[in-house]
Length: 175
Image (cartoon, rainbow, N blue to C red; front, side, top):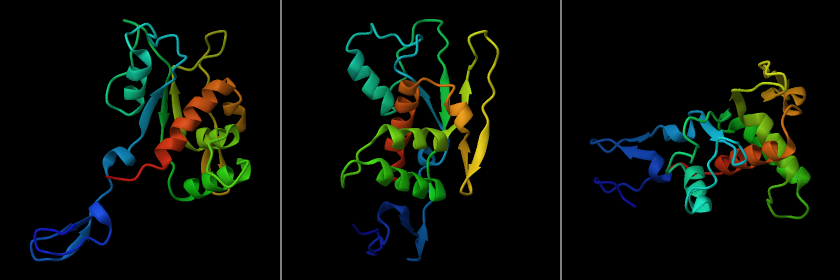
């Protein structure tokens, strides 16, 4: 692919050309830098009775539509950060540690790691008595991660769903 002035980009669509022919690196797509939100499929606020629910849910995960919610319902919203830099290297090590063979198969172990590395907030989040639960974080090899104690507050299926979502977003190529 060539620019208007005939130069070939070195870094795909992240290289931009100025009118004088000089190159500059373009900023990353904001959607791959800013935090994003996730609502779990099993959340009671999710309306699973909508027509073609699985297709609608897939579209929600892809960011094309809002999640199908029951009118007036308040879902639990996970705020996630993209896993980059040191965190991504740590996740890659975890993927290799937990995989059964030479493929990059998503496993529960790697999903737990992705969950801990990506979760920055959960609202609303309360215990069985209705008391707000505060998340705690810890330093793991120089990387800020959700503490094991906070992670243990969530059911395994929730950790898996959120962790897999974070892991899948980690490997998106910027557009």
